[in-house]
Length: 99
Image (tube, rainbow, N blue to C red):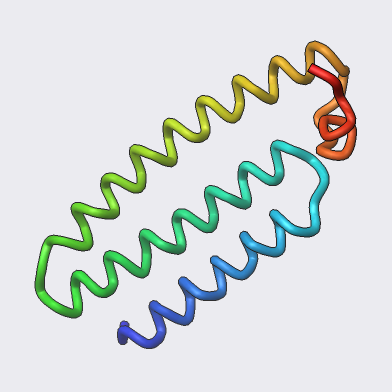
């Protein structure tokens, strides 16, 4: 595949993720959209790394994956604690809660 096709796929995935963050109100869906955006960035990093015959982009993509795993674990823990308090994971309801 050409670099242009891979970057077009990456941009499409990033756009889908950004729209998911902006348009959805469910916290779990928003976390999944953020994961899609991080995966799109990883795809672009690996594509550029392959195009330039360097391992730097692949190493950076590995670090992005570790940060994404930590973000998912912490985000799901926060969502679980909010669900226990409010019996829902709607972002609008979370915004109105007084901690």
